[in-house]
Length: 116
Image (cartoon, rainbow, N blue to C red):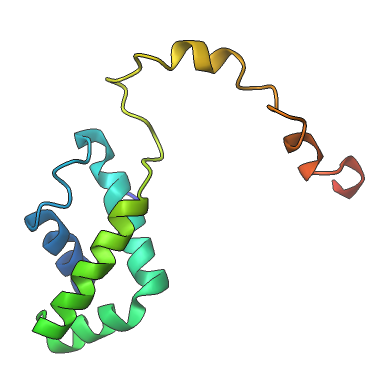
């Protein structure tokens, strides 16, 4: 979110990722999205590592190893929430059929009788 104060240990892991080239491939307009998702990922799955970094006030060799693995794990699964506005080359024809479920499976995810 905008203007939420970032915990020191979160700043540390984001700066680590940035300074080690993990953001090099991320579109400029997707960086805040990447950072936000990465911080959520770290809190959800590597809270112990964040705690350890906060306690130590630095990244030990052991923690750096864990952090590098965490960043690589996150980075390999990262999908930008908003595709870049610059590259819309082949999305025009894809947009037209988007409202139709491809094979009917999507429709029955929310049965009408369950809605209140």
